[in-house]
Image (cartoon, rainbow, N blue to C red):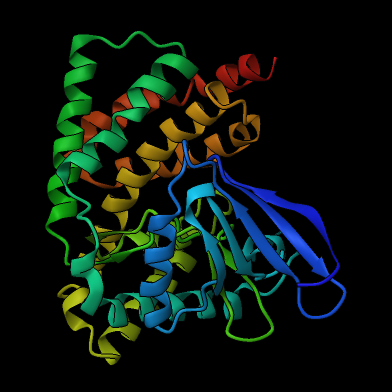
Length: 324
């Protein structure tokens, strides 16, 4: 490779670390360091190959040392979609590129979805169980009654049934503004996909359009959802788009609620277990997504009351305690 400098690039919510290799000649590269006792690079390599086969811009793997958990990757730069949005960039072309890439994943990925593990009831439930343990009890300091525990279990049952009723597609699972890199060519570059599963059609759509790090008015979100659905239909994916926009929006909202319930637990756990307090700043938006969606559907009226009376009032003080 010749003379080079190695500098820290980034870390993420896992145990992985990234370093940028600055070479005297040629483009920079990135080293992924995934401790083998904590992270297995094999899923990353397998999903990279599947997504590349879909025509999506994922980092090219130049070298891989699986035993030591070291990968030498194409450098997709450091310009996250979120960075540009926070700087006031026009979101229209940025989201058009992101949704185009997502359509490619879903449409061209149909042929390889059988190679992915299912996003089944056990996974969906295990994710949602993080909320009562880490968000309600550990973060908010709540003692849940037997009735509240039963309510949460019934809500999980409802959301699982709704999720499993959706068409199944290639699901990235974290398709959001921190995992999409804006590039001069073949933008966006897609990262952090190693946990991909075969799951609900609207999951990644809600990940990007009801992003845990940036919020948009409902009217704009629905317009983007409609445009994405029309894109699927136009490209031969009518089976993934629901019978009409109303059905797709229901899929979108309810799998979004499953995701955001999970994320409340994950962000609280990242703070208390892993010492990553920055995620406390993102809890209010995620809880607002839960609140808004629960209030929208009559089937969730009891859960909505629980959110309004028990979770929403407790969060400001809980965040203050955690920061102190």
